[in-house]
Length: 379
Ligand code: PLP
Image (cartoon, rainbow, N blue to C red):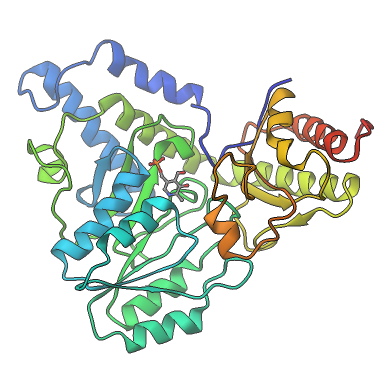
């Protein structure tokens, strides 16, 4: 049996998305910058996709800039804020994705000061600390905080942080890669300067994403060259990727409640089966205010601890690790370290999608139990 429980890393392409993309791989191959009809039909597909995404997020199509994915969009927002918008102070957190953390540290200089907001052990931002950082800042400030953590799933109250940023005149960027398409987002209501989407996290293709840039701010391109994306990003557009992303986001929003109900049930089911069958299982991150697609658990120590991901992989089960060594990296997870999660026991992230079934969960719990406790008892 093959079981894919690593949907926070990437999701399978939805068949409807592939169908929407195929004509742009086969027939409509024109360069969107060409003025002939081949080019015009490609250009029109891009603009229709932009309108679709803008409609779903309740913003203007002009505020959507297509990128190669979440990483580029995060880079563009942070570099843009520093290079074009006069930001000399960035407030972020130690559990951001490396697309943000490495960009923020790259910006650190004599001119740009970095503050890290305090977190509790579940990964929640200490709002009082954020307020005091904003209140004491004399410089133009960018707050960069993710809406949901990709490893433990802890959620940020976007509205609350947006209101704080407004109160203190700070710019607000949120890495929304893990929430895009999974939670409604009304950009006419939530005051935020930059949000990010990455198609492969919501059953779209890899290598395509977007940055929402609020109309009140203007940033210059990271990638120089031609005048594509209204001079915001040079390079011939990834047309089939953009078409696929718009279709994937549309499908996600059209069925958001049914998908959410299904995935929430799967997550609750997996948590209860793990707790029933494997003594000593504990949840990393927050149990209630958490991304419904992610379940990160600490498991009891066993002789197989350091090999769990490998053993599950042999069983056909894909999930991801976090604690020291289990992820194959020397340093382990910066998120679990920042949250001071016990790294003497293994931690595993299971992440679900609308395609995950309870049978897959049953199989996974049964194999995990065997590796940890040594008995293959049917669950
Ligand atoms: N931000 C978060 C929270 C992510 O989970 C990811 C992907 O894992 C990224 C950014 C990077 O996105 P992309 O893979 O599209 O570059």
